[in-house]
Length: 134
Image 1 (tube, rainbow, N blue to C red):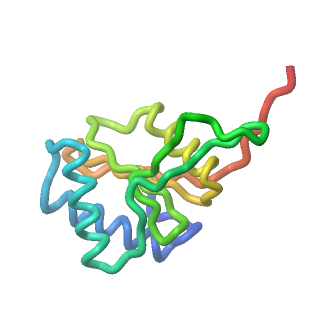
Image 2: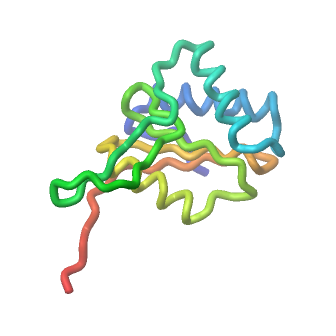
């Protein structure tokens, strides 16, 4: 079982507490946007600095690509948070947050999944991408 992350332990512990509060109060079964809206309410009530739908652009060879990314939330200016409402966290969700923290140059991403009976949470520290030579 994964406990709170070591990169930003206090901030991560606070965010986990809010996610548990949200899950305990709303349960599972709502659409993702409901959990996003409710999570934002808790962030405001607890005076947590955040940006919702934080824009991230991809620059490749000096060219800004036309397709952008958006965190659900960037909390404390350094932790990317994705809110899901699925039966389980998929590899696609994991790839999404890994790409976001890489592009945004943030050290930590968290997925909170409210779609199951128990809150599911996963942490993703930003690790360098290693490319295989052909």
